[in-house]
Amino acid sequence: MSIEVNNINKRFGDFVALGDVSLNFPDGELTALLGPSGCGKTTLLRIIAGLEHPDSGQVLLDGQDAAHSHVRERQVGFVFQHYALFKHMTVFENVAFGLRVRPRRERLPEQQIRHKVQQLLELVQLDWLGDRYPPQLSGGQRQRIALARALAVEPRVLLLDEPFGALDAKVRKQLRRWLRQLHDELHVTSIFVTHDQEEALEVADQVVVMNKGKVEQIGAPGEVYNQPASPFVYGFLGNVNLFHGRLHEGVLDTGDAHLAAPDHRLTRDANGVGYVRPHEMEVERYTPGAQGIVVKLQRAHAIGPLAQLDLARTDNDDMIEAVISSERYRQMQLKTGETLVVRPTRLQVFVA
Image 1 (cartoon, rainbow, N blue to C red):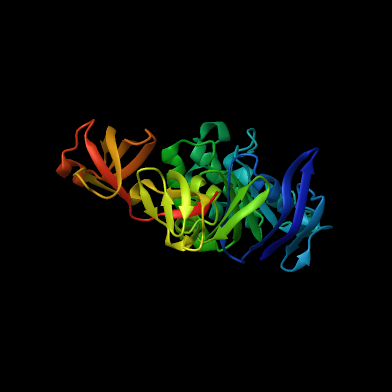
Image 2 (cartoon, rainbow, N blue to C red):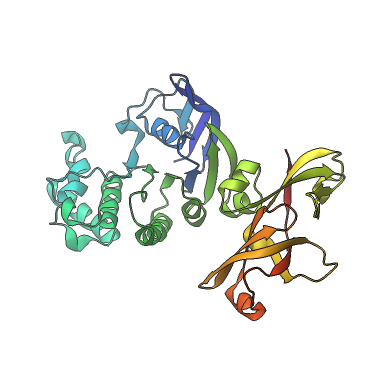
């Protein structure tokens, strides 16, 4: 099922939750709504589900206006952050619930219900837990059961609201990999809400970055990470170094450092901010006359394949973070307090 939202507006009192949001969610794709708390992503998800009504605007499901469609008629499966499982029912009965509460004329025979539930439990790899109760399960297991229950009614759209938000980091990573594999098998149009940029970039086909009720950028994960459309997107998607200065005819003057900004050759005498990710900083020992930004090494954190360097500029004491391979860090034999020079290998500048 394809989903379109056109010019959606929603206020809660004086608070603008969504301001003129228009989006297209392609049929069969997994889309992440990504942004900080309060940006409107969960409100948009609930409007698509029919659990919330917009003040104005349209939701189109396969081109049909869903304004007067009941939640049940939208054929939406909803998975909440805190599972919402029935504690007094077994895992099997939780998954079967949606099938058993259907109107009698639509309800499957009991034998078919049992067969379908068994298939779903096998799909989420928990068929051996059918007679357990939710309190007896781990958080990750409960979330997989919640997903099986949502899939039981054969939704045309699957909506997930911070599905892994209540889980620890290791389980989150396992489940998001599992969700991607499951989606590749089922191809149900899916939208999930998250504030975790790593989660969105790893799992989704399409990422929608939201901020203050507005859409900042839409694109494939690689596109939004490598070609951020705004300072907000750049700052939200991972760590970033900021270089403030005067932007004039393709050069950002940040004090002792003059950084090339060829995309701004026609800009004259403006305030600019350069954005550089830590892994896009080239690090060398300082030699007199070296080109770049002169820094002192304050701290190094080298565990695993990467070494994180905390560097203080010698001209203004601003902190810079650089990431190099642990192998290169060992080869350089860097010492705390040592003077180094760094150069951005890739710089994106926005007019402030």
